[in-house]
Image (tube, rainbow, N blue to C red; front, side):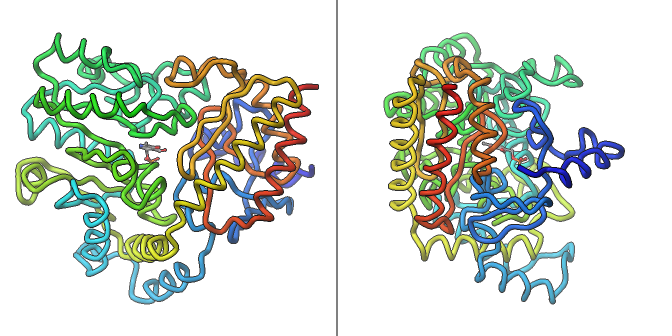
Length: 428
Ligand code: PLP
């Protein structure tokens, strides 16, 4: 596999960019070697600067659910580019995207657009605190909610990839109101609720994707909804990853549960920087200009990003790919399990809709602790063999792989062939 040009750019990039990247997982630190630099992408494929072509299962960590440069989306963006890039005043696109989002999530009467998932979540936490007048929040170990101070504890994702317990530079005061519970363990939530009477909210990834894919049991998620309601604590569902991905109405539609506050990102911008948080009217009344909770953004509701988000969601609604995603993910699960069995490898595969990933362990993966039993050395071998055989995976055991509507049967067979080769290499 030729990587000379990537190596050259990596060496050059390190001079003025930290680790030559602008987000740590891109550095390939846990899988070793040099990060690839991308030249272009189209449909299901991504091409690096050395001309290597891969089936893209990173999909920019989720936003590119239609694949790259979908023709309808691209046409829309081009049209809106001609009108100007940002105005510091409202546009019709914001109203249309808000309608699409609120229709999909019945728990949301109103929405506020921001520029990233991180911003969406930190604003949602502020909103929960403003609304309840309470300070503490409960988060789950292994769930990632962006890189704001209060949430950078036991946070999965890049921190897990780099084996960091939290982040330097986060003062104790910033996390003293963050309580940690265990995913799929309702007792661990109950214990906090019994001990503290100033809890504003529980925040959860309703289907976790940042410790690898981890599913909530039906019982756990239903009890969590009931318990928070009974305790007067808001339930924040962080659907930055799952929104419009596991179903059009996100994990909430699939699980039949309504959050008090919902956070969105990734897919709703279709590849442009958009995040959002929303809730029923009574809660959103707190947000400025209606209420006393301040939150703002120079580029929030950016017209190009709104146009891209609208085109992406409309196309997604039209294509309704969720059943196909399920079938494809099931096919890949079977492929991984049978290749593992053939080669005597202990493997678990977790998947949900269009999110899937393997764990190299005997242990059933139901939370962060069990996710961490995965043999990351095996993942490293697996990862590079997949790359050599034309499949771009997230360079981390603890990130979900994604499916896109642009993936053809041929692409999926190519992924299966790569899996067969990579599992053999893991066993050798
Ligand atoms: N919440 C979840 C569930 C995420 O997966 C992510 C990013 O991966 C975020 C929040 C943060 O979003 P962003 O990277 O856009 O700030």
